[in-house]
Length: 102
Image (cartoon, rainbow, N blue to C red):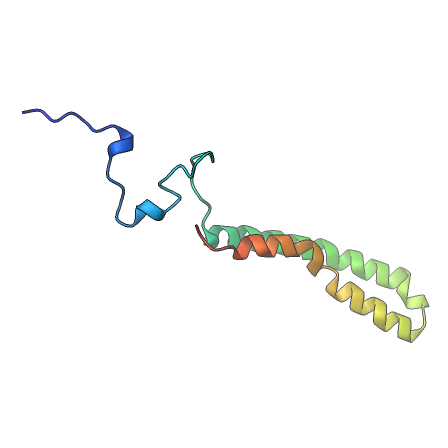
């Protein structure tokens, strides 16, 4: 007695895979490998380090050329703004990195 191979749609999924989007098509979405949180964190960390390495010298150059000539009270405000301004462009990246696995 010969057993015919099952079509891919009828093959049994691994235990607990019924709710796992890596094993199902998810409707109209393209079927592919889902990027895990660990991989997103690695990519995001490297990107953030590269951004800060570029932003830091630019902020220092701006502070050295323009801010040094202003009064002390204005310097404090401008240095505070430059100190936290790097966070705003990186917030979408941080949200993407911290998104839970599907």
